[in-house]
Image (cartoon, rainbow, N blue to C red; front, top):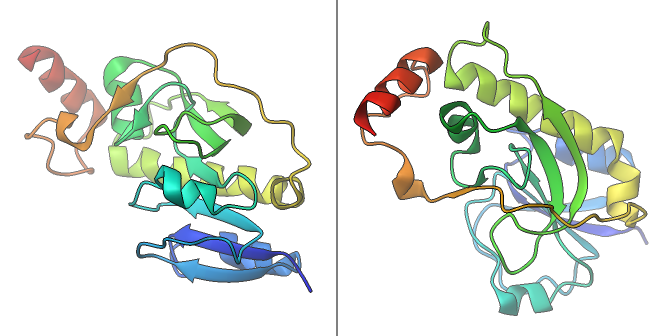
Length: 189
């Protein structure tokens, strides 16, 4: 009997990770809605999941759940990390981390620092690149992540955090040019 994986968030049409996990011989159950009890799963993976796991849910885990976050933690925890890395001038990248009782505060499994590319002129373009990089980082380390042979490292420094409501009301399209958004943000501070 193989390791049972609960995949929270994106479905198999939205990410290649579910098929990659299955290709390594793991059994996957996809869940997009809320879930209370994870005790029947060996591993929980969160990617694009819109719900926060609370302490009660975390206590039902056999081992720490892992989350893919499109930010170079500890920077840009929480919502809209791609937007804030450009606006705040913080490091950009992707992180796979353990989920704890905080929001994006768990120990780091793997991460990759990325250079912000000025030819990627819209948030939607940089978002797609970050998603692809997060998926590649996961696939490159899938066995280690699912068998928990990685060595978790605590996050260092305070970093930054943003709520959903921190996004400016004028930011209505991810196709907005990044330089225009930075200029507008700085004018309204």
